[in-house]
Length: 117
Image (cartoon, rainbow, N blue to C red; front, top):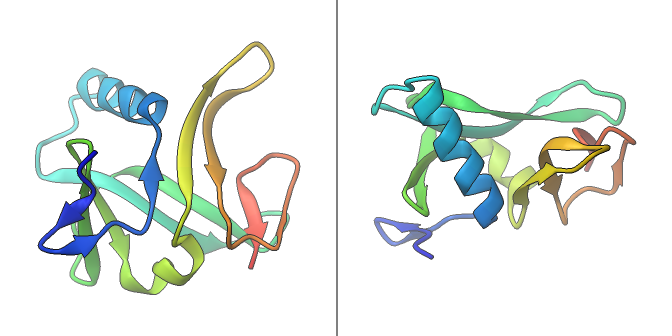
């Protein structure tokens, strides 16, 4: 698994299931090659922060990483909340979607998309 870009180690991980689903979404939605996966946080959600996950263009203050052939963009300021996070894809009867295993989260909500740090 290649998680380096210009000697910068990616602060997050994607499981094989997440990579497979992201590549499928990128193909199905004809995401342009200049777009990468934006991973970040924003204020809100029932626990204080919620995750940002979607394809986007690179912005000026982004760090860029490559994980399993997927360009990942993350604002430098978000790293303190996301270092060590693992993003996975669940496809079960009760739950379907991306999940976030964040070792920095002090508390999470029942929906799994909101946390406090």
